[in-house]
Length: 429
Length: 208
Image (cartoon, rainbow over all chains, first blue to last red; front, side, top):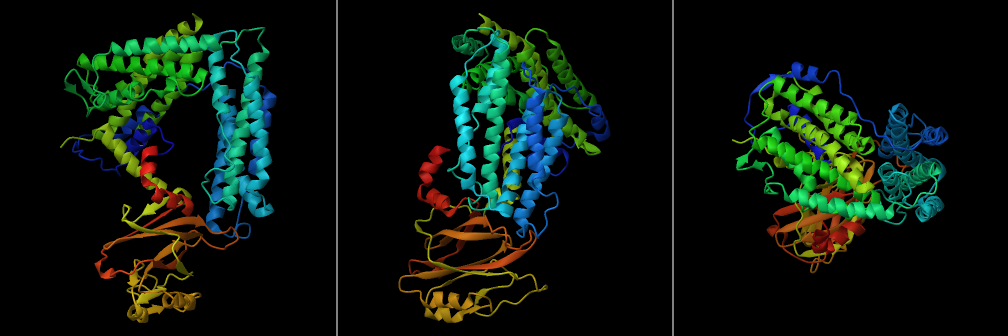
């Protein structure tokens, strides 16, 4: 559908509903809560869990990618007018792309960790190269054909990295995150002859390919750097490939037997718990959300993708399974999580914030745990954003989604350390 | 009445997001009628295009349309058929570039085996539309257009719209009085892709 995740989509609906401009079908609950009190719940923000990677990113590499991003932005005039690009729609498109790149560069420079800065500059470079490529097509006659050699070089470099890469590491858990980060970057492709978003001879079509080349260039260069930094500190370590394969098999078997222990779940109605239908409550929404990744109909990540990432998929599957099981058990015991007051919302949020804080402090397997938490806190941020945009009076029905998000965050965060332990044990067997 | 479930919300979200995508120009597609294959189709049919920077009616049948309360607000949903010499004599053109050739196009049509369908609309000034195919049945006519940016050196603004009329030669003579359903879709995919989708809708469904 779009690039939105399921949770982001729900957050969007929540935000729109919260803004009072959406009529979700069938809502007739007119009970309202005090908007300013809801806004004050999130006024102080919450702790974040920035993405980290257990590898040292050199300052020279970071400086080079930042410099590249800024140079690409600077290659496009800041004030494009009709003299520069007569076609107003193309002018607007290039102008917006440049503005977006400027914001991304600023965000990347302010990011909390070196790893987030690396990813931020890679994204900024792709955006900036779109604008720069389109502008060069207009100003200097750049064509897609001119970009082919650069596309070929990046493919060759990717192939060379694939050929020399091996799953090396002193510790299989620590190395897993690095190898998954490398794998993800090696997936970036450049399509020089495939279907294009824009007509190929349009300047925007040139910008599109320039963007793809830049994204792949940054991905391959960053992957090579991460890999080289990772292996530079290693003595003669054997390949972890057989260990990762064995761990994946073990984890999958463990996951399936643990899932089989769940009380029977109707995949079409995961919000029905022992005959009780909680579908119109935050718990029902949260159960629905948590069930999706463990639904036997959708579990391709075990086999799809590359080795390190499939083990991480297993980790997240355990997190979702245990989160679903624990929330389901609480519902079965009679908890309903219904929203009747601002205090109810505050309690759900506190539980989520505390769960993230507690999991983040868990010393057992921080590399695995924090990788999941970095995603989990996005749900917290989305729910907080919903509350922050509250009108003066907020219908309780529109709070169902942020409340569900808090429940999901708490359940996932609570489930993460034990899932990390399980995965780490399988990897170190 | 029950309040919405999460799945209801996702459906609403999908609709909302479709709406959002529809606002974004290059990634948009629009359709004034849900497109279902009607049986007959002509890919890249013979056609003639009139385009004018003023949003005025470019072609009409019978009396020339007049502005209503505001000179700039004409009805642009205008569409009609030309099915014979008598119809041709009723057609009028604005004094715009290409009008003579458009009349020649009507005159050169063999109405024993062909029908001309005229479709008129407003198009964003910085974009152009290309006719990809036309579908028709006894009661229904649908057109499909690819929408692309005009060249970078075409001076235009994002808030301006041009009038565009397309005269389409349908390779069949039929009685247009039976037609009561009209549709037109536009998207950013090129005609080769749009036509391919129309040729193989079944395979397209299977890939989803």
